[in-house]
Image 1 (cartoon, rainbow, N blue to C red):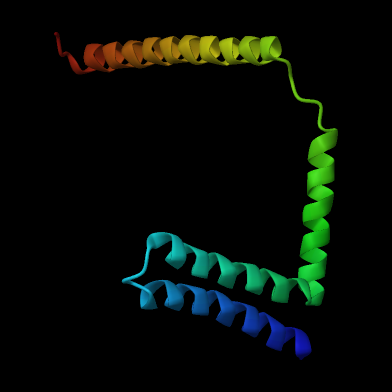
Image 2 (cartoon, rainbow, N blue to C red):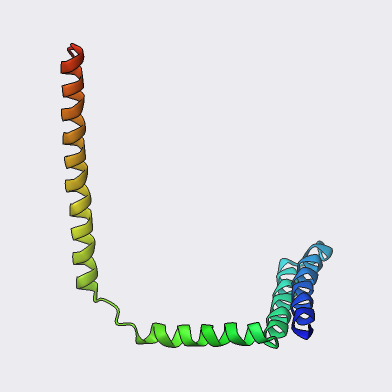
Amino acid sequence: MADKIKLLLAFLLIVAGVVGYYALGESAAVVRVLVVMLGVAAAAGMFWMTASGKQFFGFAKDSVAESKRVVWPTRRETVQTTGVVILFAVVMSLFLWAVDASLMGLVNLLMGRTN
């Protein structure tokens, strides 16, 4: 039950930030955005104190660690793969155009139409 109250409070902090943004309509844009950012930061802090928040932040931490272990392709590999994909798309579009034109010609022949 305490987690639900904390989650509700986190939501209300975000709402308070947005309401503050519109309530400070005459203030500088920087101040208005800062109010929203403070509301979101306070909500994140409140969310972090819940069980689901701790689980989420643990998952996010593990995701960042996993992304650092990924072996990214070199520039050359990326360019080669992109070239193969573009070439395949061109060849496939020509093939589909040929099939479409052939079927259209066959339908016109069967219906007795001439162009």
